[in-house]
Image 1 (spheres, helix red, strand yellow):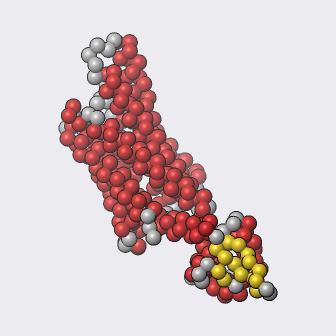
Image 2 (cartoon, each protein chain N blue to C red):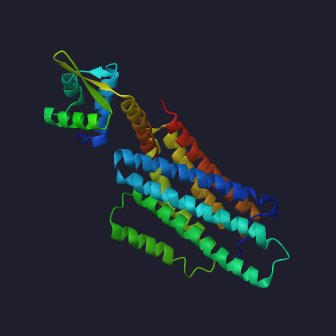
Image 3 (cartoon, each protein chain N blue to C red):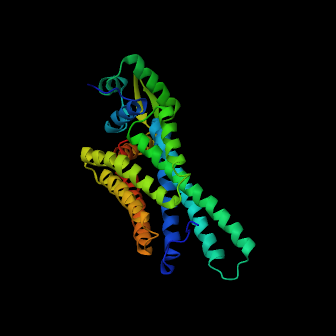
Length: 222
Length: 90
């Protein structure tokens, strides 16, 4: 059976807080992207907002799962029937988190690579999502796919953009995606050692905090 | 190659021209500074008045256009959004 608890006991609660922070930041980026679309009518920003809304929903699902584990599964008094029901619910919600996050990453990557053909995009979605079905360890596959999608395609694009503008905000976006890629690399090994989970989760929230700083800088620009 | 300006960019350019002239400008100045044909400029001006981003004033025989609070807010929002777009580069 796939493991669903990766956090060291001392870190439990911190990861949920980090996920809530990331969820809120993704939501705000989504709202600002939508505002950008409404003002400019550039469709790219409609899809960027969609991808950040998906990330936000994915974090909401992950946070809910963590809270369920915290509330029920860590109690010794839980009955077998209830245990099985909660495990099924957790499996479904964690799959939801994985699928939504991967769709969001693919959208961001497609925007960066200027892929506009819907059939090509559908093919990428299908290949990515179907590759999860036979996986014995879906979390490993998810983090591997995420690290590859972000590391090989999205992050190099944001690097080029940073070089092009050399502005603090573009540097923050590139660094944020670099950290997000690295977080998935660390999370690949979370079953080996809980410290990888801690490092991966910390890097992930740092990447979203960088996006928050970028948004604050943009918002208060004079 | 010269890139074609998008509609929001043209609106921003017209508003900026008015704003930089202390918020009030004659139509000939808009025509000269915003790099538009007369017909196009008239269309944009009508739209901006409808959207309450600028208002038309008639003094004697002279017509002037003034940027409104909404127009100044649009300019601020547009600059933030341009910065946001540059930071992602999409």
